Each structure stands twice: as C-alpha cells, then as structure tokens.
Amino acid sequence: MRTSALPVPAQPRLTAAAIGRAATLALHDELSLSPKPGLVTLTDRGSHEDMDAHTFMRSLFSLRRYFAQIAEAGFGGAGFAVLERCGIAAEARMLAATGGVNTHRGAIFMLGLLCAAAGATLSEGGGALHPDRLRDALRRHWGDALAERSRRPPTLPGGIAARRHGLRSASEEAALAFPVLFETALPALTTGVARGLTLREARVDTLFRVMAVLDDSNLAHRGGLAGLHHARNAARGFLDRGGIARPEGLREAQAIADDFVARRLSPGGAADTLAAACWIVRVCPGA
Ligand SMILES: CC(C)(COP(=O)(O)OP(=O)(O)OC[C@H]1O[C@@H](n2cnc3c(N)ncnc32)[C@H](O[C@H]2O[C@H](COP(=O)(O)OP(=O)(O)OP(=O)(O)O)[C@@H](O)[C@H]2O)[C@@H]1O)[C@@H](O)C(=O)NCCC(=O)NCCS
Ligand SMILES: Nc1ncnc2[nH]cnc12
Image (cartoon, rainbow, N blue to C red):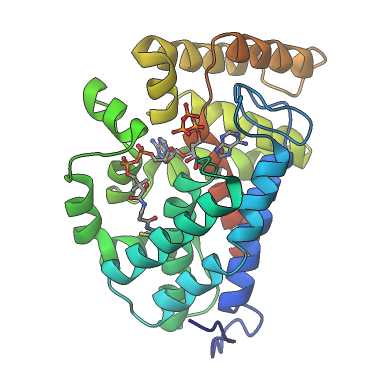
C-alpha cells in the first residue's frame, strides 16, 4: 500500500507519512531513554540476553513504512481485519530483521492502532489532533472488534501469563481504549514537562508511573505475579520518594535497574506505553 499525502485541510503538515515518522521517532525516544529498569537502552541490554540496541534499531528500520501505512488505512476507514493484516505483516518483517526476537510486537499493536485512529480522525476533519479525539476514534471505529479480539484465547507468552494471573493483557487494554496511556502516562509526561522537568526526567518519571499501575504481561511472563508486584512496589517507592528530579534520583533509578536485571524482570509493556505517550505529544499540539 503506497503512503501519500493525506488531503488534510486543517493541518496541512499532518500526513500519514508524518504520523508514521512520529511513531518511529517515539520508539527511538523510548529506546534512547536511560535509566530504564530491565529494558534495553543504547548502552545497556537490561534483562535481555537475546537483544540489544542494534536489535531494536534493525526492528525500527523494518517498521519504517508500517506506521504510515496503517495511518493511511485508518484514514480510508479500514475495518479491524485490514489493520490486523497490516500488523501481522509488520510483525513478520520485524522478526525477519531481528532474527526472530520479539522487540516491538506490543508497539506494532498499540502504536499501530493509535496511528490508525489518527488517520481516521483526520479523515473526519475538525482541526488539530487531540488525545480525546484519538481515544474516541479508537472506540467508535474498532471498539467492538477489539473487545472480541481480547476474548480470543491468548497464544503469546504475555497473553498466556495475563490470562493465568487474571491480569489485563495488551489486547484487553486496547479494548478499553488504553486507559493507562491516556489516564496515567500522558498526564505524567505533560505535567512533568510543565513543572520544569527536562524531557529525559519527565520520561523516566512517566515510565515509573506506568510501571506502578500497568498489568505488564511481560513482567508476569518473566517473574509471575511476584515479579509484577515487586516491579510495581519498586516504582511506587521511587515516586513516593520524589522520583527522578532530586539529587539521588538518577542513582536510585539505576539501582532499581540493577535489581530488575538481577531478577530478569523487563517491563516491555510499560516501555511501549511510554513510547505511545511520546508519540501523542509529537502529533497532538495541545496534548
Ligand atoms: C494483540 C497482541 C498484542 C497479542 O495479544 P495479547 O493480549 O496476548 O498481548 P500480550 O501478550 O499481553 O502483550 C503483547 C505485547 O504487548 C506489550 N504489553 C504487555 N503488557 C501490556 C499491557 N498491559 N498494555 C500494553 N502493552 C502491553 C508487550 O510488548 C513489549 O514487550 C515485548 C518485549 O519484552 P520481552 O520480555 O522480551 O517479551 P518476550 O520476547 O515475549 O519474552 P522473552 O522471550 O524475551 O522472555 C515486545 O513485544 C514489546 O513490544 C507484550 O509483549 C499482538 O501480538 C497481536 O495479536 N498482533 C497482531 C495484530 C496486530 O498487530 N494488529 C495491529 C493493529 S490492530
Ligand atoms: N527498550 C525495550 N527493552 C525491552 N523490551 C522493550 N519493549 C519495548 N521497548 C523495549
């Protein structure tokens, strides 16, 4: 599917290509952030033996057209089946680029849906993108299909772990129009910057705020409920003590990262949710 400039009267700049570019940049915002407990950064493979920054960059490159394509599909009023085929094809390209390692499966799903919602919103006119309009578009266009999708028996490690432990999986989170993204991550990021944190500080605090509340199926897959609760408690304690913006903040965040590596914990779902919040800030002027 060729991406082209969308006829967007209200925001001439915002095209499917621009929406897609913002998604790629947001995934790099997440990858390049440090410290990030258990997660891969540009200099640290975290709790992962099978992937590092190069793996993620190869994965990012393999997705360079996907996000614009799915935004175009959303603009064209595509049904969920079309989006799903687009996502599954992207997953195959990701796995080919990473040698079979799952780097961005969750991001392909979550950011893919958000880019499709952005395309659908722009097709309806009405001026600049806004987080509320994105969430509304997700519900109106694909809410029923996502609810049905979330009831399918899980086949992936995360979804299986989520089902086993009674957690809200990624597809269940999507069926609810990403409550943790819109109600926790995005407000944390925007208020962090508004109160004078640097972008890095605001992103680190946002990651911890998401870790404190998200049913991250990667944590449950790797460490069971005990692992998920340990990660949540560590995040809550860090934030209760003032988060990153204090003299010992960076050192404490690094100590938590070392603890997660020792326990092989990796909050991949929180990483994707952070990336999605970075993407919303990039495409929604008034976010
Ligand atoms: C719809 C799918 C996401 C699968 O459905 P399911 O509900 O089973 O999803 P989960 O398994 O729960 O989560 C899938 C990935 O989503 C991220 N994630 C986890 N929890 C959440 C959450 N609560 N909210 C949002 N997102 C969440 C997470 O992805 C990231 O972590 C992965 C890397 O970590 P790692 O520990 O290495 O993972 P593994 O390799 O599995 O472990 P090891 O082998 O290393 O030990 C990486 O994927 C990150 O992105 C979850 O992994 C979806 O898969 C699907 O069906 N896709 C096809 C359709 C599609 O894409 N459509 C697009 C538009 S509709
Ligand atoms: N930086 C990262 N490290 C590990 N898993 C991830 N999933 C998404 N981003 C990730």
